[in-house]
Amino acid sequence: MDNRLDLTIDQIYQLGKNGSEDLQAGLERVYNATPLGPLPSNMVNTIYGINHRQTQLALPFNRDNYGLTFFTRPRMNLTTNNIRFVRQMYPLLNTEPRSIQRIIRCLLDPSLAYPDTQYTNIQPVRSPYVDDLNMFIPLLSNLCLTVSGWPDYVVDTHTTPEGHYRESHSMVDSSVEVKNTYELSVSFRNIPNNPVTLLFYFWIFYASKVFEGEMIPYGSSLYENEIDYNTRIYRLVLDPTRRYVQHILSTGAAFPLNAPVGALGNFDNSQPYNESGDNVNIRFQCIGMDYNDPIQISEFNQSVNLLNPGMDDAYRDQFYIKIPYQILSFFNMRGYPRIESSTMELEWYVSYAMFQSYASQLADFANIQGMRNQTFLQYITPSSASDYKKALSDMDNKAPNSTYDGGLVKRAVNGEFSQDQLDQISQAYFASNGAN
Image (cartoon, rainbow, N blue to C red; front, side, top):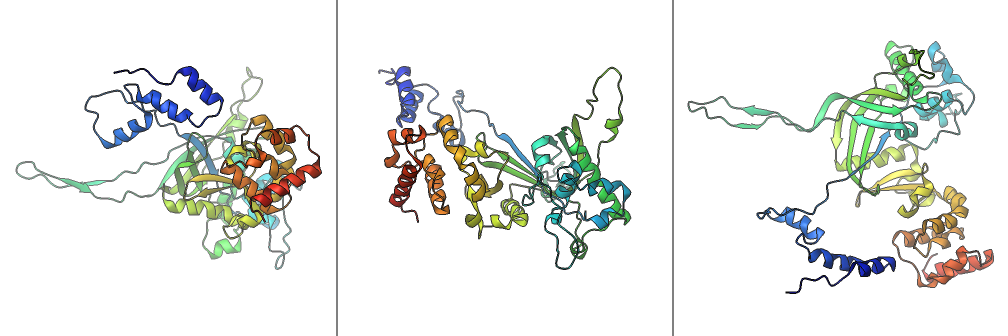
């Protein structure tokens, strides 16, 4: 029997270089000719039957990405009149919109951006560095280093007393759900001006003053018996591409227990700088935990909608556009998240206005990244929302139109067409694809 491979390494290289769709088939033939067999069949066989010959399994280890950590914003009452009750909270009255104190105040009280001016004299308080529509605290998500302390699912057992022959049996005797309290330890990287430590300082100071009665929550929080300094921590574990959610964990509710200001007073004459505050370690008291419960997807999305109603399913297409996975890097630090329940894809959306403001740079970005999709260039010229959505849908589905195959796109990228010619080409493209 001839066991020689019918595909050489040089042939595989040429297939990959030319972008041939036969590459996968060629690689499968190579794997099939080895004792290990093809990778997919190894996975199936491991699940289906016993490896009674004890051959080595050609299966990789699970390599999930650590993913992202989200902290929802509390809704403390940081109105001017409430702050004036407590002297230590006075720094939050800083009127400079770009100051750390104003940023912290806006992050911890999202209601300040949209006060009820009809029945109160409260004026909006905003900072250009705080997105009023973002339900999460980017400062904490971006600087989070470690999170530890999540409980495991464990069941208690009941074991019967032994009989004459010392016989006994056991059974499950508890609920597996985590509804008790526990502590999470979260470490953050500190940055200049010490915003992380200051944020937690004011956070726990407010909570203690609410307990003492010196500060009061909003009336709606009192009416609903709501603890207004709670947050909810979401952990999204992603796949290696950082596109799909593999696991989701969340606390029921949580609040910080400490603000490590003591390290700021440390002194060491042998060191030029105080490095004890480089990392900020915060303990969170947590109540309950959910893991991979389908309702968590809905709760995550509803949290986003709470401060940004435009992200609701009924309105999202009117105000926001999904960023294609291929260009997510270009919109880093921008966008609102959403988990698609059918695919578990972590989607990111930006407004049409923001998308258009970036559009003039996108063609160069696509050219630099060597993106293969032929429709990418076209959506930077049309102005209507339907054209944008059509082009992005084509791009996300990797369905290039033959009209823009090869040389035409290259000539457009090289600037060989005038703006009027690009507009005509674009209109022809969308007309041929049925866009409104």
